[in-house]
Length: 283
DNA sequence: TGACTTGTTCAAAT
DNA sequence: GATTTGAACAAGTC
Image 1 (tube, protein in one colour):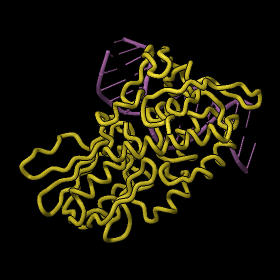
Image 2 (cartoon, rainbow, N blue to C red):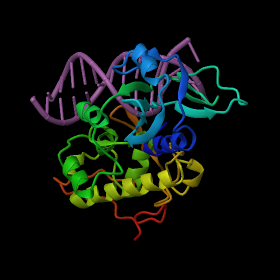
Image 3 (cartoon, rainbow, N blue to C red):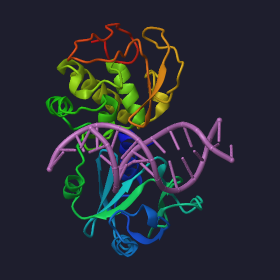
């Protein structure tokens, strides 16, 4: 499930394999994934073009092309990128295959086909038109607090809303809220400034660390919920049991003892229990 | 077999 | 008008 760290690692992957290579031909089998772009435009723009530079905004990857425009990739749930040399067999099923003049291929696969592909002329205009929020690793603490103070929906839903802040998905949102000890169903606008700051710092710390490890989950095992979202787990903080709830139509896992529902209008206190998991909370 | 999962979009509700 | 909610989408897993 590609969230910000996975997309950042795709960006680095393209940087390390595919830049400054000329596309000889493309093979395309993803009409249903196209976003405001015709198949003809995709083919005409990519053929003979060169991948120059990459940008990431939230979960979107933009690849700047030498001759006008950017190739936009969104990975949905199951999107993946692989670079193949001529001696390795490319996969039979793909959405987009870029065949470079040097014989290598960059292949975009997406088994569940929830990804997106487009040719975008102006990246900033695209982000603005679609109303995406600031990237989760670029937003400042002050801006984060200001935006979330106004939102009257569950903090988990707000965190995952790409129009509020771009890059956080379901899995990371559970970990961020666990580290910040905030109940996923707490209404964002009803959290205190201190609690919002905690969430902000948890978000930045976790995402940065995940990016630093190229989204390799085996390097993030000291985080409780990452890759381990289950009901009935023993919480490392209070030894209580983790719970499952549907929040905003999405699965949410949390520790009800450490993550108490909070409402500052009635001034209910959250659990103050400190615990030593992860890198947060201490300091 | 069918319930469940994911991120995004769209329509409906507030 | 702005914001929130929930269904829908595809297809893989269990």
